[in-house]
Length: 270
Length: 191
Image 1 (cartoon, each protein chain N blue to C red):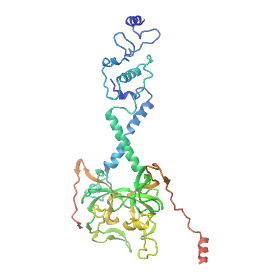
Image 2 (image 1 turned 90 degrees about the vertical axis):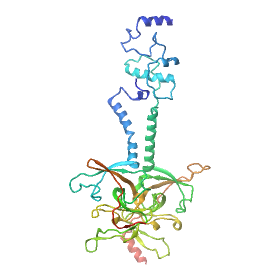
Image 3 (image 1 turned 60 degrees about the horizontal axis):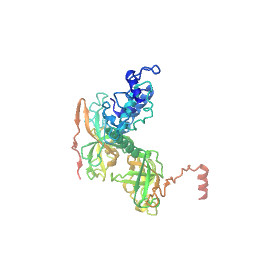
């Protein structure tokens, strides 16, 4: 039966049929002088093609070439090449893969510096709020350079006197606010007020006795602000990566200035 | 014979589909260019006369501004006196300022008088103590044009963390000039 088929193929070309329109010769059709393309031994005899991918096996190698030619064919003849898988995306050309990887790295670095970052912090300066070690802060970098800051936010910033170090403190004064320079309390020597200069913020740690902050190095320029801490967690091997996860709440509430009646009532009480 | 990796580019398809494909391919380069501009090097224009005559030499003659190449990688560690640096304005973090580093940390500075508002009207005053020491981690920057420059004489020493880049090449006309640190001969006593 197969020999009869081959005889017919010799005498009459397979694409000159009254039932099918005249099309270009397809290499996937069985041809008496060309072995079947799906056999593994055929790869050496296929027309030379430049193949850049090294990670694919030979039967797959021949399929996309036929698929490429199939696209030029306006008539889908061959059932076996319609269900072939398309090559994987992204492309497997090694140089292009490296380039795609580098582009992804650049995007990741941009996201880390401009959108969201996660880093550990240690030190006793925020002790009532955060322990000395083990806390990881999720920082929103949308608040870098002092955008969208309000009093009471916890921010990360580059230390003004040590640019290689990063600190975590709370915002006490925005530009134009009046802040106490020293430590609040009965000591009267450093009871001075300062108006925070334009473009600067006053940062103070929660643990006042053990905090190196704006009371020591002065107001911090907004250009050094890296971001606002929006969440914290204490990951550990026993309790998991999100142990003690909590969103940071700003404890300050906006208050309205007292009305005239409240001021008069307060005066009457004295 | 087309290489294997091109077979996923739509060869036949609507114009919108092909346009969308190429747009996506070229748009994936955008983060790479933005990253390069932010962290490696950037070509930028310089505004203003504060570094005259080093930059914007034609400030009084026309509208042309100087192009310069700003190197951004590894700038904060190797600051030297006389370098032209870019940094964020301490009074407005969204603005980038170009000035020359005159004093490093520990140097004693003789500040220049700046135009301020005195009790009777505009005066020129020295805002910082003569002979002040530049604090640790800070630099003293000044513009070459002493009268038209708002620099450390006005807002004090600048934290080195604000420095974003270093000007390495300036395009003057058709010549590319490499910027060499030149320390102006003025009142700086080195540490």
